[in-house]
Image (cartoon, helix red, strand yellow):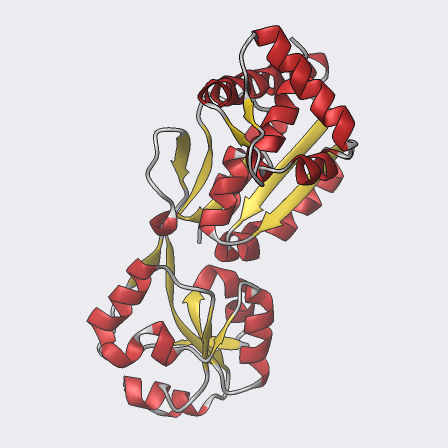
Amino acid sequence: MDLHHLRYLLALAEHQSFRKAADALFLTQPALSRSLQALEQELGVPLIDRKGRRNTLTAYGRQVEQSARRILSETAELRRSVAQLKDGSLGTISVGFGPTPAAILMTPFLRQMAAAYPRVQVNVSRGSVDLLVQALRSETVDIIAVDLRALPSSPDLDVALLPPLRGGFLCRAGHPLLDYASIDLSMLREHPVISTPLSDEISRGLVVELGANAHPTRLMTISSEDIPSLLDIVETTEAVFFGIFRCAKSRIEEGRVREIQVAPHAERLGRYALASVAGRSELPVVDAFRDFAHRHFGE
């Protein structure tokens, strides 16, 4: 059985149009049609309902679609395993980062890869946890570092916890709020408050601790996944950053930004994890990333 024919069937199932599927596959429509007819002849059953404006799969076609996905996935796994056995020093690693892990790990990891694995191709993806998990399952990325509280519990994922990190509010040195012995939410809201997109759990926690006006939709004036840029804004304006202190480690140590406590104060811990697809074979460099993340992520 020609694996290309299976790929073509999956493309038609996705687009439900010979024209759109052919365009996606960079084929002509006649070539696509001939390939799928050959698959139908080989199996001896109709796979495609060609009536009407949409080209949908028959019951036989839907069953073949499920098998085709499994066959193609197993074929990709076989090729990946063979490549790994041939030369562990070559290959590609694709890593997905949530905002906080990116701020802590991304640049140091890329620096290490350039020095220790100069022949390995490194791809970096950024985005929400949902998008990064989708990328894991579609084999676009090999491993992700994300907020544990936004990570869905699923048996197909291997999850390894990273050290918890303290978080809260930071402002620049010399900020007017530092003149007060005690700061409440109303005083905080007189200034721009900036953060990354927050999980539902963190949002609920802010409301429980500080009241309804602490919900991110009311409290935050700037939201971005680019934490270094947010901290640059904090250093040069009266904006206040809400997030993980580890992201601002050098700025805190140099006295450029300082922690402020908003009454009633609560200790906040960010919880993060590495996730990969269970049972998938991996290049050795993926384990190297795991080791690197565990060594560099803590306080």
